[in-house]
Image (cartoon, rainbow over all chains, first blue to last red; front, side, top):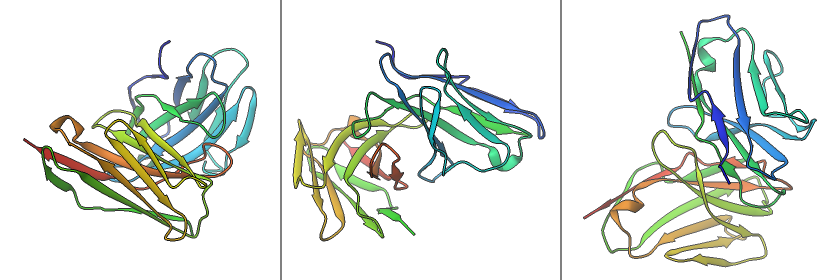
Length: 113
Length: 111
């Protein structure tokens, strides 16, 4: 059973471009979470999704950021018109239920130049 | 606002000793608390989950306590090894895995 797969591992975008981060949860997991980590800071919750539904997006900026978890395919975190402040490591996690251990991917490191 | 505090300074200990890491939280009553390990450039790896009605949990050389009165969790690694060197993250949660993470404590175990 493969772990949580995120790609790409590293992504460089120029200011104003779009960034698409993909996350394939572990097999059998229907709960997906996205977190952002800035250097020397803790992970910050962004959004929680179940198949085809956004359950909680309270940690996601209202503008330029969106997330989806379609019936088929990976979860996508999309950042439009990226700015330098979006540079961070973005981690996806999945779990088979709600109050159980979460399995994290290796992250996508986004650099905006 | 909700706050999770972990020792910001690195913890340096000798191999074979017990490492004790502290996690304090304020303005929150979590249903559970989790500990993760994170190595540089990698994603967090789950270690232990303890619920609000549990005082202590053990797994091999790891032990975690949860004191809801003090709003504190202690994480212990007994018989520490250099391979235990990493950053350890504390996270509190409510109804689902919407976790609030501390900034982590870096542990260095010296031979």
